[in-house]
Structures are given as C-alpha cells and as structure tokens.
Length: 126
Image (cartoon, rainbow, N blue to C red):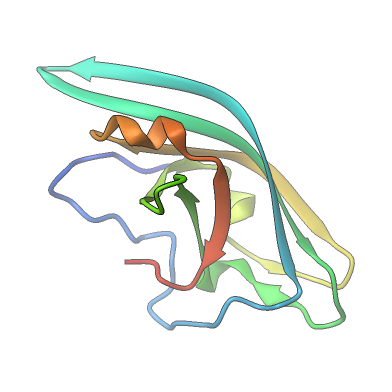
C-alpha cells in the first residue's frame, strides 16, 4: 500500500502527475464502504472512511491512472482527498475490459469525511 501522511496544512499530491488529463468517459468507479474510524494523536483528531474500490474500463481506449486521482464526496458535495491507497489504484494503464481493485482511505480533521458515499475519479489532483 502507498501511504500518504495526513496533515491539515500540507497538500499531498505525490500520487498525481503534474499533467492534467480529462477523466475518461469509459472509466467506472465502484466503491463499497469498508469502515469508518478515527485517530487522536498529540491533540490532533483525524476521522477516516475506508472504501473497497474497483476502477473499470468499459470501452476500447485505455486510460492512465497516474494522471487521475480518487476523491470521496459527501452528500453536501464536500470532497476529501486520499490518505492511504493501494498503489494499483493510482498507477498504470487500465486496458479495454480490465479493472483494478484496492482499498482507499480518506482522512480529514473534518468529521464529515465519514458521511462520504461516493468515490470518483478526477483530474483535479490539487
């Protein structure tokens, strides 16, 4: 698993390429809630939401996961970035009919991360 350290004042974008690529129409993301959690370290509280994620290619044209990112979205449209993710969900090309599966953990000091219900691919990796 690739590990990203969560810090309120640090933006982590190491898993996304600098070049922006549009999210392909042939990409499908299936996510199932796995767990909710929390951590309290040195007076800082962090809430987590873990999903089992599958990214599938539904058409003929391959796409490169290294140019895209996963984000979790709450019903009020708040978006949350990845904290920890299986590397296979952030690297490599997904060819026609292929899919990749892994675990994605989203973390925030905002408890609303636990209300996320949607995981999506995006090219906004900031």
